[in-house]
Image 1 (spheres, rainbow, N blue to C red):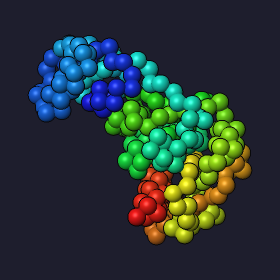
Image 2: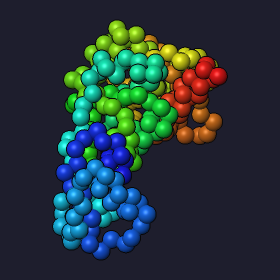
Image 3: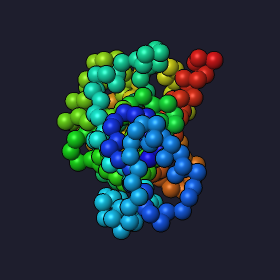
Length: 239
């Protein structure tokens, strides 16, 4: 909620707070941010707030805002105004909104400049995903594409290196050196992983070495590890 008001990417019509909510510093900050943005704050019955919320446990606060704006794929593939090359993440068949939100949160923390979501057979930015993202959806531009394989082909045309994560058979992530070049990391669905066409569009397939008994990581954890490894390489290249 606070990040929604801070970012200012979309208009917030009003903020609802439950009448019985206990005072807390974060609520005071939300009220201050709302006042600064000239957004009215209304006290409503908790039953009314929970009835309007589209997620479980809304925690007594609800924002009524415009839809999240969609980014253009070509724009995401361009360097940032300060010259920072793109660091993107794409989701192939990820249908769990919790995983989508968690990875968007990690992506923002790693310095990712954008995300790519297929329009069909994939999780989208639902209230559950937004809650798991903890404000990251307001900071990471998201492009929604008709088909991921064709989108990856376009990304490659624009000079962005496409790296797909796979549970086995890929190059060792710790031995891969990409420096500070433009990169897009593709994560696949839990279980089946990357689809065949998506694998074919990747420039390289990468595996995260595991030391334990289990054979795979949660998709959001795997994506976070890959993004932070790329962020580390970028930092060392600049140092």
